[in-house]
Amino acid sequence: MSLEIPLVIFAYLIGSISSAIIICRIMGLPDPRTQGSKNPGATNVLRLGSKKAAALTLLSDALKGLLPVIIARLLDMPAEIIAATAIAAFLGHLYPIFFSFKGGKGVATTLGVYLAVSPIIGLALLGTWLLIARISKISSLSALLTACLAPVYVAFLLEPGIYIAMSVAISAILIYRHKSNIKDLLSGREEKISDKN
Image (spheres, rainbow, N blue to C red):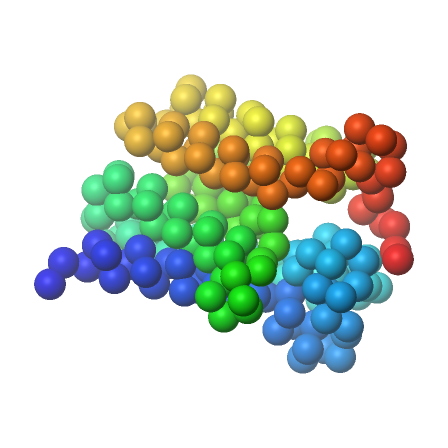
């Protein structure tokens, strides 16, 4: 039996493991879905007051995107399946089957995906996010601008064209998931990375 469909399903299931919720439970922190921005992601975990938990969440969320795509590449899957695996892991994080389809916004998982697809692009995106975050101190703004640049990086640095389609799809969904942040940015109410609630 072909491994292509099971691999994509596996990627979605791995993506569906909510690192933020599990790590907060283990470390005795509040459920991130009920505190702060109510988003189960590393930035909100940081706002709960634990840099260690936030770092573990960031690493775990990135690994959810990285590992399935690396497996797809090691299995020498065609580019279409690698791209589908990447999108499945990303969607698993956003809409996790294990947590009532209510997940995070996908920034760290997206980074993991890109690091696996192309380390150069992944590092370029990480550098872009860090630069914007350092200047603005706003996580959502960093994510949005980096998402806008991702398809540009892919278009210039990666073949074949299916990866451009993958990048556009991921960026479009990521921007949509930040719609509340966009409203807050426009109104000047968006929280900075160091803010706590």
